[in-house]
Image 1: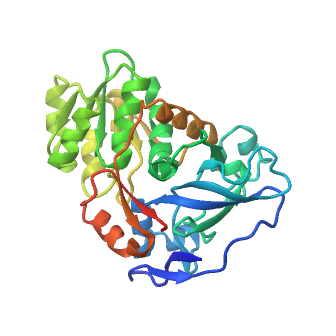
Image 2 (image 1 turned 120 degrees about the horizontal axis):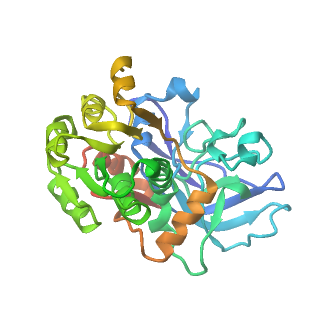
Length: 344
């Protein structure tokens, strides 16, 4: 089968021929990929930025935003049948550790992260995963457009759920960035909270999309320069929550400046950092929250919202063979929503 692999850090990905995955364990499921979303994490992987964090060895088949159809199932998977449309949770988990028992899939003691940690991901025609990772979609669902919800959507759902205690009536939530994750986050903030939603997005097209998706205000400035504008919008008090989808450059420092007393700085984007002044943290009683992917239950809830048409995301499709070109377009900011690789 065809697969897209990282064959050298700092080099373009390559389309290679790989053996088809086979069912071996009772809970195994092989998914025929309909679409695989391109995440900025994939770009970081290609650059070598996650080599140490995940002990990566090359070659590595990318792809952790996946959806498709069941191709084959193990003997312990009675609830799925060949041809069922599914979306794939990014984590392969044990089901028995304390974290799994609590439903915190991403904290599993022995989890695997296909497409990131060496387990082959979904930039391929077929992918091996676990039945625990799959959310069954309604019959007749087209899986490809939903692929980015497996991470971009799931991360947004998890992050928004965790900041809702700070986003009550009369509050302001700032979303830094309006790419794929930000577009979903804006919709979820309007569904799950009564807060005023302010989006910081310098790109005119993405700013317009943010308005169309329900943002109450859009600040068309780079996130590095938006703190004063946010303070002006909040009469100098600041926002009760800032959801940082950028996380690099001078953005974290400006995000902290935007916070009101008792507020939360919710981090999704990464690559940068900020110096924390303990006295400031104490005086303003701030909270900092890091967000990974969400839970299996959150992915199921998100799919219900998507099926009802309450959460949408614009996608641009590329053939599997054009993975390098598609990733370059994402890196250059030329894709407004989410890029999706489609095997043909």
